[in-house]
View 1 (tube, one colour):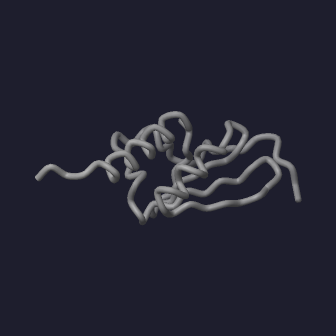
View 2 (cartoon, rainbow, N blue to C red):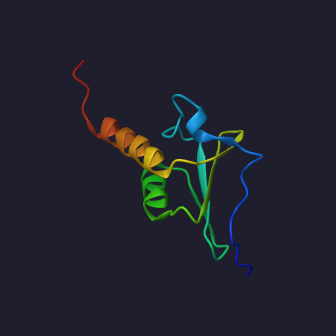
Length: 94
């Protein structure tokens, strides 16, 4: 398997450019390619939390929804997905 020195995402839109990126939507799939070329995908919130937790700055992380976005701010993506999980677990008061 090839080893990638760096991924070039200059041609992709950046997830940080979207004010309220729809991280928690089921139609958003996250894809991670690590430095060894191993590819993983995440569709559920639980899978997305897991994928973003292990992702590093050396990995390529993209979001497909249906356009392709480079996830260029991993800490912000992690926080947004965790906030979505917290909202799902909080019972509604109405």
